[in-house]
Length: 73
Image (cartoon, rainbow, N blue to C red; front, side, top):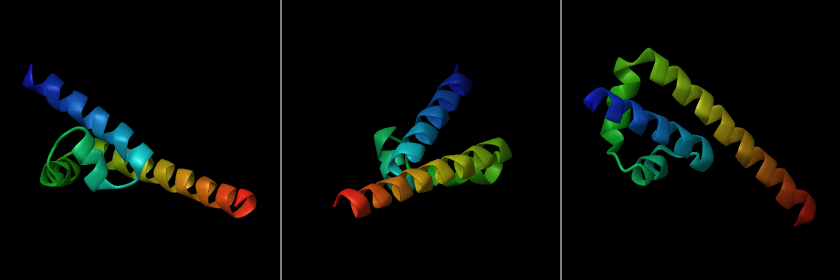
């Protein structure tokens, strides 16, 4: 049971991280402590890879928004 809860929190965090772009804000949304995220990243290579992917998604969203604002004002 605890494993399912942790897995769900990891999924929620990753989705929030991809959307919000910061560990702090994503952790607050779940809610979990930033240190929990660091522990997961350090101990779970699959989670670490998913975090890297989510970071890329967030960066792309920010870039798209910056372009939109540059064009539309």
